[in-house]
Image 1 (tube, each protein chain N blue to C red):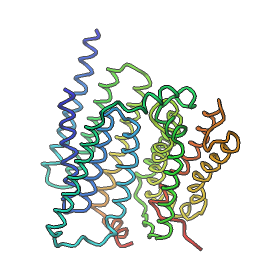
Image 2: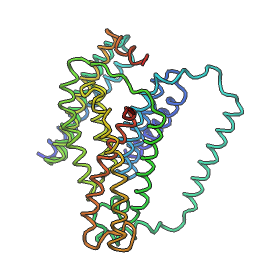
Image 3: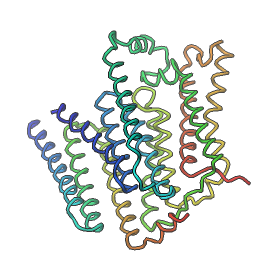
Length: 297
Length: 102
């Protein structure tokens, strides 16, 4: 039964991706992209990677889809003349070359990777029971610090480009009851994902994305208006994650002599502190990426 | 007893899937936006609720049942709200136009 499901899933991913690429209507294309993202996150689940599935569903499909929908009206219409065949051929050749390289890499991967056993052996001293969190916040915390820096750079670029903020209009009598149900739930689910990250799939990125989703729904419903988004406090919150992470790295350097080498036995406290700061900061960053920066005076 | 409970859960999930299939056929075959919304929002919520009940019967676990109830609640609330918003836009398109011209 499950092989049938997998084949149908793979076919559905290809079909929805093709729809997203070739449908003429822009909204339909974005919908195709959203469906592709959801199906891809299902396939991550089938591949046994629920952490990636959560991130893909929340950020890849949800928030990226919202950003694309927000931009769909603003970008001028695509040129009606078709792309030259040479460009199509070049893109096709590139895609085939990349797929070939991936297939070659996977098939030539003789020995089993050493990472899983290394992580499993050292998990008890990492301060997290979830191997993914142990890698992200302890063994390879350096990489995560740089990822947060990338998010910060993206926000900086958006602030410099200063896009027009979406104009929100009151959306009718049903939206406030909707927000009353939705917002407490996003806070609850965000907190749950953050805490769960210690021993099961979850963590700061997923929790931050869920919080940002709730905040964006609230912003779009016009309930908070643009008053809150104009405050610089949100931008400060957005950069606080990177600042606290970097400070923690330096503090660990002073305490133990290793950058991001947490003091023995206290790793869990450090990880929870960093992840909590990151959750709020990621939520603020994603919200600002959607609504545009605070206005300069 | 367990065989009966399992069969009950399976029947619930099958009924839910049937609702979703009907919703899909409705979106595909019905002529205009409002009738499509009508079939989608109602059959969708009923289908997801039935599948969640069937799954809850199968797992027989309080925490998992609560998660399933939460999923059902979110689908029901967001389905009803987005259906309302889309229908409202159909009758009163000025809101969307204002955003488009922003």
